[in-house]
Length: 234
Image 1: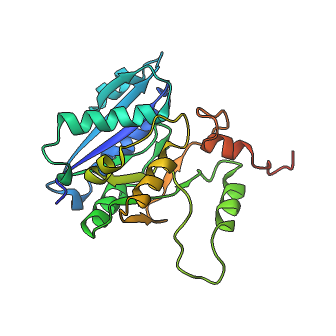
Image 2 (image 1 turned 90 degrees about the vertical axis):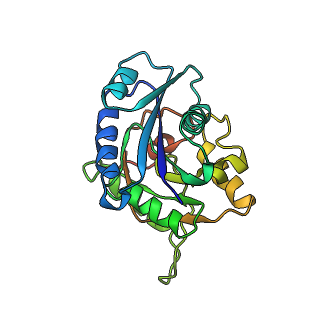
């Protein structure tokens, strides 16, 4: 039975966007269905030269500082902190991950917990762009192009560290996030599936993410957006 949730957020010089991410998480943590479940947030301030760590502490988050400039190592450091500091039994703990430039919906944690109670070992969600972004329409078009025709049940092919949840015991069974500069989320989900854990790919509770094109990680979502044709055709 899940009695605690640890939310892990890697952050590299994110003082401008992190407060919005933490405010959205605070709302999600107050969802009525989480009564009796303790929610803690770990911000991993990775190679930060700004006020990211201080802002996180002011918001009530636990802060882990690293100097690896590596999302896989940063995410793993955050999970390790949570599991070694707060957990008596991994079977009681759910790990949720998002990004410092993303805002989760109010039902985000409630949705993941509900799936965990139904026996899923991991929840792989989707992300969306704000409607104000000029890339929102092309992103949606590309996203919809991955959906099979005919209205069949769709288990989407996407993996985003900004919208991911996993049972702590399943996480430990796979060795956790690998030390990759990009694709650590894909690698974890692949390992979970390889080990026979139940992985739910769902389009419910999508996370709103930043439309910035100056990617923080090569080969990540920012590069995916930058590769899109601009709506003006330029």
